[in-house]
Image (cartoon, rainbow, N blue to C red; front, side):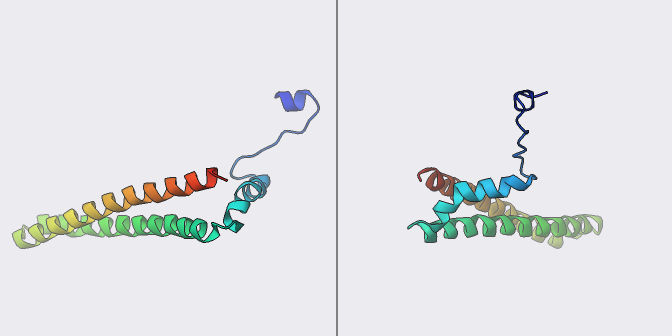
Length: 116
């Protein structure tokens, strides 16, 4: 039994799946997205979502690369193997760069949200 129920108060479920979570989030974050900085707020939020989608796209492409890489190994095709290694280098570089930029944009959004 929690303190809330012990004192006759109803328990508040504020987890992400609870109905009150969205209401509480909008109450806290809503002013930021309607303030004078709303364009920056929306740009950063859209940027975080776009970078997340880009990361997902690269993960899908990496799965396809995995297939092509092992096909090249199985067929002992040296030229295709070298091509796949180049593709992997590009995918690895892209995912690292995007991940770092995603963290930067997300933290910038968090800092601006906290400065309200």
